[in-house]
Image (cartoon, rainbow, N blue to C red; front, side):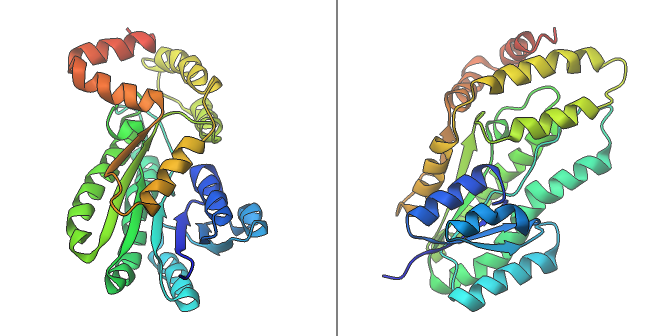
Length: 273
């Protein structure tokens, strides 16, 4: 049996990078896609293939997918991992800045899927794994824009799963909590540059220590990588994989407590009352 071909977007760091390296070890043909090819040297050294792809540009996505099809003849699995987090208050945040995040987190996922799906349909099989987040289910103050982009990933994934089931294509969502991937460093740099306005500054001042504490003892990303690989390898994968105690607990608490009680709990934890 020939080796399976996997395309992973956002493979230069985080879950994408770790998943790529693990799949290479398992014998997959792995194509890592990112805007900065030079940041995927470790992937290439391990035996993977790096392709330049900007998921916000249709021509770039088409070129990358065509390159894989020309070389391999197929794509067996797609991991839509490209994305980034940007936090801000609804009242004071620059909308154009958040449009960029949506273009990566939401429209980027759609662009790549649109170019890969015709090839999977032709084969009558395939696996798509969309990386969401606990905040795709549980939104809180200051995370509204990022959470709403992940809510969109959840909704798109549900629709996609129903649309492509008849073609033998599986669609799964992975919903990680806090893991040690470097995500927190990127977010903290941005938080330090946020200008929320006088009314909201005290909330930012309280949120930063809360956020740092949340990631201080964050576990390694191995459980998330394992969930992604399960979603690729299993004949009938789960529709959703909530990964991490905070993810499972947060989703459960949100369902059990109701909106107002959950709001008060979160505001208390973040010292926003």
